[in-house]
Length: 490
Image (cartoon, rainbow, N blue to C red; front, side, top):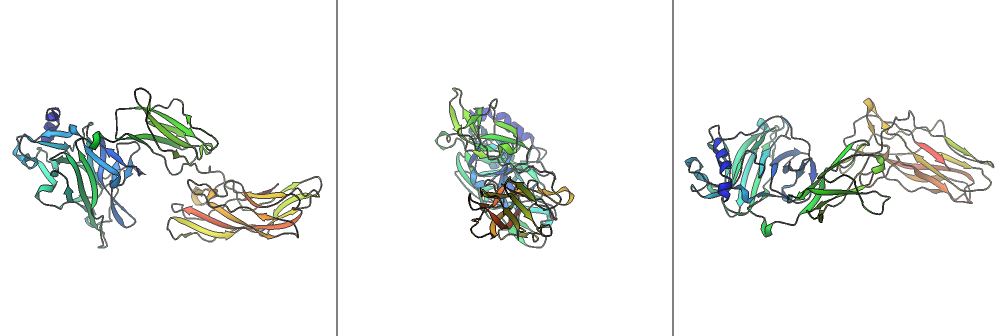
């Protein structure tokens, strides 16, 4: 039956196909960690990367939108039963087996009902490797049958790239900026492990290698008739700027024919999940705002009886502090008067500028950091009623740098200190505020207490200070940045 269904597919195979190469870089893909089964659609199964001096193999999964980059250990590739074909009576294809026997083939030209795997070096830059190429090898195959990867010439003749039944490893040289597909032929049903490896020589003569990397394939039905459907949400970035468009996609593993979804959200001030009206598809888009910061989102998949089949794990939206016009200085002066006496917060006009040392890369190599001290802040309370007070600070606008560059005020934190106070005044420092971290929050983009005095003990003059800590992402542009810290006392 399968041979009959796929006869037209093998006819196309004999007609030949084209390997796709080019210099266009692959689209940027988010990373995903969930385990998936890929059985339909396009994927660069062997996706070569070079980052931080290391060569690695990934999987570029284009079966979801937006596409994602996966670890090969998290992926099972499936040649479904529909991929079965009969070996033709053509001596050029005798390497597949006797004419009339059956093979399972993922073709080099896309079939919407089958997986379309290839290899990819489009993320590799020119001038990094000798000859602008890497060597891709099939090191070993474990499984119930033989595996052959082959392309075809313009007359439909096979060009074998990797073949497991005549001795491995087999290797090919692949230029950088190459995106290619081949026919993947398996001679028997069952589970296979293909071990691929990429090697290259840098222009300075240093050799780099991924070592053998396992790729799991299932030919035919998944064991047990297939796993229970699971649902995940892809597309959520680490952080958004206000007014960015957020596009989330619900991803089934394995993919089924079900296509009815509902999306739900829960924000920090809500006790329960709320359905998002009008959203019943696999994709949900909306605009990021600061009001949505820390809101969570889930997707649910429903069957034809509107019963829940699968529910995703929550994903959390983090929205950066909105950019604002920066202040021109770091001077802070504010006062609040009362009918009997007054509460005044001030800084010395000649000692109000904080200049942090040049930021240095931290030990982990993932942040720029600098430490300094806030200039002394004086709080004087002459109110007879001694109601107590609280002094707070906030940087309401982003740090502004050269050529319009900015970074969020939240990346600056502090540890307040009481430098001096009157006898019996009872002033205590505010809590330490760490610089902003995605998923955690923090920083002086929001108001934070510098120091306070409880009711009955605030009268007198106190001097407050703070240790400052700046922690920035490594992609922050070089330059000198300034911002204004506003102090208030109530």
